[in-house]
Image 1 (cartoon, rainbow over the protein chains, first blue to last red):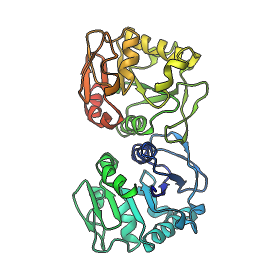
Image 2: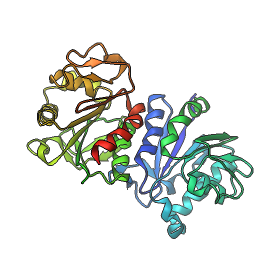
Image 3: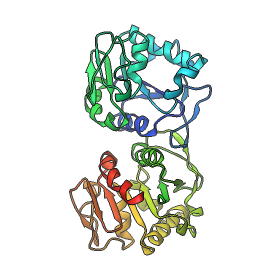
Image 4: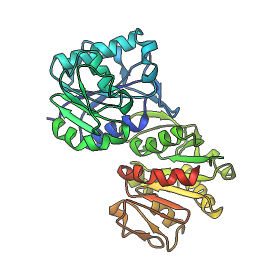
Length: 175
Length: 175
């Protein structure tokens, strides 16, 4: 049976990244549910389009066991993450990511995903793909210049422009 | 000054295709407005996410002169297009596409876009990229196996998975 995926979408989210995952899951019959990293399920793309996630991240907390994998869909919320790190939805997001890792589930994400994982002490000694601007910022993870890296349960991609390179191997892991 | 783009989104639309155009336009300061090919501006992606377009295609009709280029974002609405071709929003879409071509504006699209153009008598003798299933169906256009083709004012892409290959040349034309 296909594994079930929880998809985190920050607000605003890069729609090109988010929907490359979602349309691929849809076409391959991988079950998924989207969670807005926000107070409400209606969020925006970087490009200004309103979209409706299935739920908010607060309601994923405590239900991590219902899923096998977590996707972090990055977006323009992240450059300002430092200013808003204390908000309940961001704290919920961090807790959820940590729980998925503690339980050995798959963690998937592009752009700043690896930095979030690193800040949580996830992926120590593991190689990651991440936005070139933050390559030198990660401490426990090993930043690379690669477009996409799979190391253990951590699936990372440099930017939304490389998500398509990860998808074939991600599908193998999820089917 | 950057050219202004009208973006048609069918219902349901492939979100991966749609948002590769939109996020790229956003990041490159290309002005754009989205139009749902539907009765209402709220439509869905193939993957089931509700999103809000800026307007509906009926309100683009007669205002084509405000734009320099038209993107057709394909989706799962298209395999059923034949059943719904007579609906007002599909008739409006066809009229708008024809007007953009009559005025020599850029026509851009992936997957079944070239088939729509072909049915309207647009792009006669011009080479197009299109979904492999419909390569032999086009009559006036010349179907190819290429990922992306630019021929005159017609910019076509095989599927949403190749949109990124068109974008650099599309940006040159729009800036």
